[in-house]
Length: 339
Image 1 (cartoon, helix red, strand yellow):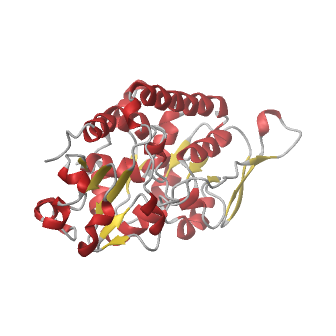
Image 2 (cartoon, rainbow, N blue to C red; image 1 turned 135 degrees about the horizontal axis):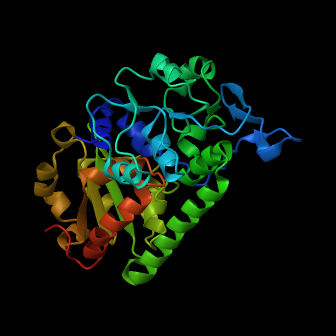
């Protein structure tokens, strides 16, 4: 079982936070680390966070990460961390394995993150800097981590959920002295999206709804203001009713399943039997089958393997998803979706 799947299965209590607030801030600005003047290569550098400041005295060589998002960022920038979290026996995600192999490595030094961040293990690894741009427990971890090494964090009260993957990558790269690499990575992915959109013009202007069955509710993920840029960069657009939903008003009742309709409907069932409804239950529901997109074969299932990359985009997941999810979207637009 991969780490993204385990993360999904063990995050049920926080599922709505992950799937709504995390998707909410596609346009927020992010502060990159600021450097002191008068020194070569931008060091010493002050790293700011909502919890304090640390100072990076020189370009770091040994990098620790405290989340899989930060691992992806490091690997995308050509850095193999000296230590990384691993949840239980979870395996690396396929995009991480591929990136690691491209860097000439096959394994990572890890600590068990089942019970949270392992300060001792990180300290033993002797990092020069800690990447925590996506550290969900950084408010509790910051004091201890800052005693080990300077921390690249998010900034502002909403920084954790508001920063885009591009902003996280730029922030980490600035601290690592790899801003040129970050620009190449970000520009390359943008070019890939543009090329894919041009090759699939039928996606342009197509409205879509993306919804997920959580344990507590059916959640309208693609509300107005959410981070659905993976889809919009391909030319897809939101239906007008998307503005009726929001981060705190994303529930869709079984009596109002028609609100899910759009040119194409994308449904995710990452919680399986733990969801409010199973896929089988929903697809048997008469009201669901009457949704025009469903009746016309323009309904597609978002594979469980896609759920986490969509919720936690990184410079490694975006190309991986682009290759695998676009054919699903194209089939749905053509009416060749689920029957």
